[in-house]
Length: 242
Length: 219
Image 1 (cartoon, each protein chain N blue to C red):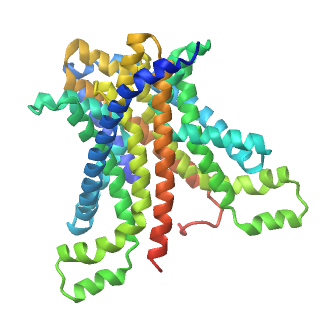
Image 2: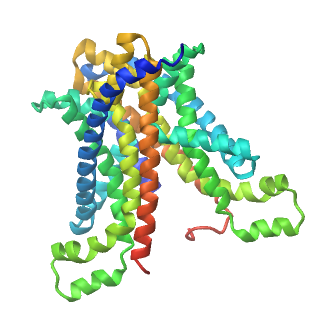
């Protein structure tokens, strides 16, 4: 979908929220929901940062690490990709304390979502590194570059561009997954919605607003990643000529 | 003791029963997703001027969390007179959510069909229905089976969300065992292991299937 359509959708979503905010039945719930949205955004940002760190780390270790570390990274990726995010969240929240490690709910949310998305991200990073043309690697060898130099100067800057769209999808997945943290007592957007729904039974305005708010957050993220991609690939001879 | 084996054996049959519910939910919602996704993808091509509407619809579904969509169908639909039990509402929500993803997969499949196939169908005066049924779909589906398989696995891993509306699937059962006995370690770890085993097995199956299909379709 083109960036123009996305911007139009964002404008439409904001306009609908704006119109609804003038209605008493809707505006009543806005402050509480916005409060929840702030927590959602906090978890999404911190989780994404952790995911990037884990993704890059796991990918580099799996490609270049010594054998035992490589196995460890593979086990990490398989476990976090093989079980569902909610199970991981519950495991860290309910089971870990029984081993004497009690994390507060916010930390559990960030760690679980970050590790989960990081596992998927490591495959993205690995794939992007391996997709850099063979001639580039051979040229580095011919120039007698060390592996660190080769990665830092030649391979990673090119791999970075290829990573942006799949990472964008992962960030959207992470943003949507933050709704799961409502099930471990954190009062994010989804939790606020559930709570208000139970107190007032005004189901339609509450869930309509919540859907619109998630939509706005996703669209902002998608548009941001598109702009980043456009900027990062400027000057590189790749893809269709603009 | 951190891990109690006799407790593990005690809860295993209960969890096994709940696993059946999880698998049922997975299969029913995947059939819904695969069918509805195909319908969306075909309508987009066959009916003029629906492309934009379907794109926006797919984008809307993919941009909002599945959990909220489950709540929406479970809590909001009754206000319009459509009361669904938790299992049906949950399966419907998962099915519609993944239909949006599947429709994009089908679309990629259709886009890969050589233009000559469409032109030949027109030249032979085949109806749109016959063209899709006998020419396009049989060629478009095999290459995208692995992609659909990946969504089946992803969908399976979303079924714990049904616990949020109290469907007695694996996660909900594990949580109830946990709150009854104050032992969360065994039930939740077992649920995790079950998902891990299922995911690894299905990943291997998809790889095998991919090899089989690659051997059959010579290009």
